[in-house]
Image (cartoon, rainbow, N blue to C red):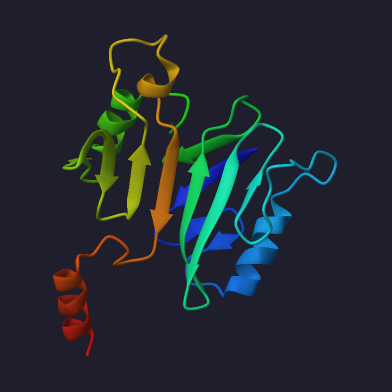
Length: 165
């Protein structure tokens, strides 16, 4: 199954800003009832038979972020504008994302990248850009889609509140 990242709206049935109760229901709908993972945690995360993980992060009874972890098989794909974020090499994902939006290396982690205008964040445990056999460093391991302001520093949050009032 294909899951299209649609920042800042959501992915699949999960929508940023929905209530925790609605998010829990949407998360449950992503399970394959014929192959429920022992690692599933209702209200937190589910694993599809492909190994694709969906994790939800709620605050103040609202869904603020959705994290997806790389599947171990290709029966599920996570796409953004046709870019398969887990199958393509990380540097290729970054290059192709750069054609759509600004994307920058995380200043605290050179293996991670953030597309701040879209509130997307891509992570891998370490960078191994030139070694396709180093699966965990050559490809991204997770992507996070978040609500506007999710990455704000306290100063940026205060400015966002000031502008919104």
